[in-house]
Image (cartoon, rainbow, N blue to C red; front, top):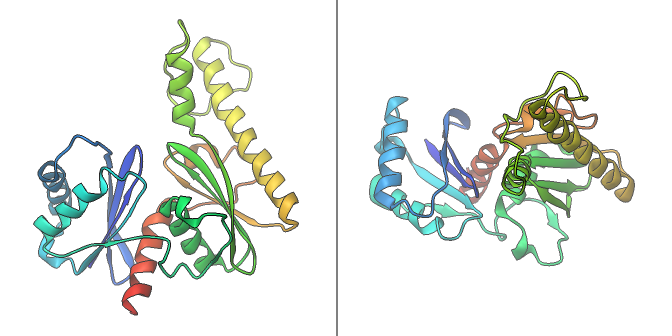
Length: 256
């Protein structure tokens, strides 16, 4: 079995694959203050609740955009799972032609998502990842990774609105009943949810116009299920895309 770990700015998503199938997955809050022992206890506890023992794991692969947390999680794997993990970098076999000006600047999660999506669909793609930041990745029909766009995440926008105003509350990020809010909470929800779906659709439309191709548009990340039904351009939600991409890359590296 394979342990796949995606270290993001807000959450650490991890999952266990058995013969290429995702058997279980979890999410933890990302913390730069937790020790390897604290993370190790959480990993072991969650996995054992699902009947997965550490000795059953054959390998681990990690993608990270949080450098201070990376060595901590690597230590977890070495101490509690007794093997050395693979750490994704830009030299991995993504099977894409990367045309970014400086590939080292690309978050590895974006490349993992692009590799997974292109392997699945073999067509032009825009991948929208709703995380701490919302990223848009563009892959052409012939497998060229062009880059994309980065926008503030929906949760980040909501927190900023609350933090920088005197009277506006934090709100639950759910679709309101109507675009016209009838109280403060629903008005904020309308601005955030419908406004943000408009941001997504505008960027997707402009990217497609710029590359001169109609692409498949897929979404992933925690808030994808909230925004995809409202968006006019998102065609599919792939909630485990990054973990699936990590599984794919591990198999490629190991030649399995």
